[in-house]
Image (cartoon, rainbow, N blue to C red; front, side, top):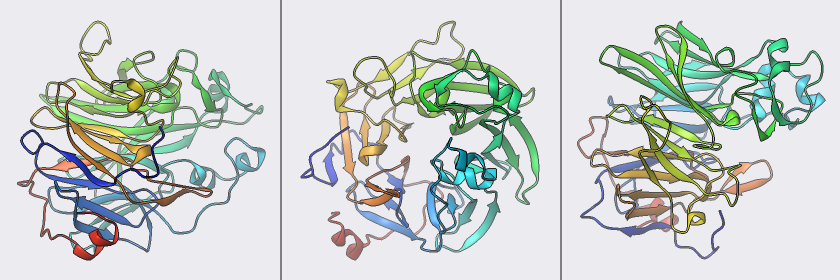
Length: 389
């Protein structure tokens, strides 16, 4: 989307009687500060990490921040799919791809590291289980013969070369892998082709993972952006048991489980026929047809669009907290689509080697009684510096 260079930042709108009161966690991509905002859009907690390049994070119930991160040294600039890129080891190839990480780190409220797991192939997302284990997504080199069968995309796949696929792993606190599922062996190279704008360098490109463990069920929900696919894997059998495809979604992010067993997805809309727009949809995976049972889109539709990143989180009162990632805009709507809260990021960081942006990967809202919240205090100097509150 586009916006005026004179747009207001910080808190731009609020209907206190209709919002879900709480604290909103964000990490402006490219920056070194992870922030917790109050309902006035002011920073009340800041994790400052100059020793790493921090990324996506969640606040755990024990008060620790679980966060993906990268070492400060940036990789070489070989473009994905080029001969120079293909000649690199996989650990170096993935460093030029979006949302790559070299470790996941748990830090306490004071900022001290209490747990860390290193793996140069992990990326995008994670899920902390109730037993203390962590589910991660990681890149892997596909079998070359299977990679050659993958249809779609643009660019050439040289003979004997391969594509990057994805696998899910569950690790215990000691870093031992206790469960694994290989996505590029579950999707079909023909039935699940690369989208037209995806380069023939990686196939699945998972950007989200969420686990459902209720009523004896143990299911993993994922998003494969490059194939326009959202799916569910039964963790006991390792089988793909449900799949959502276009035209319901295009370039999507952040599928999440709702308490009723339905799935909510941020449908970015990239590659959607006609003028692109984003929307949020709710799907019942048990229904015969994959048709939305609820959706939100702006009026006019082009008022709400983020071609990449972004997410949506259903709140206990039925409202939806939406992160329009490319614009750095976080807003809350009612189930009827009424705007009740909006905050716009003032933070302009270097998000690509040659570009700056206000990008936010995702946002999470925590109620005032959330057990993981520690001491909160308005950071007056920081807020004044950035024009917040």
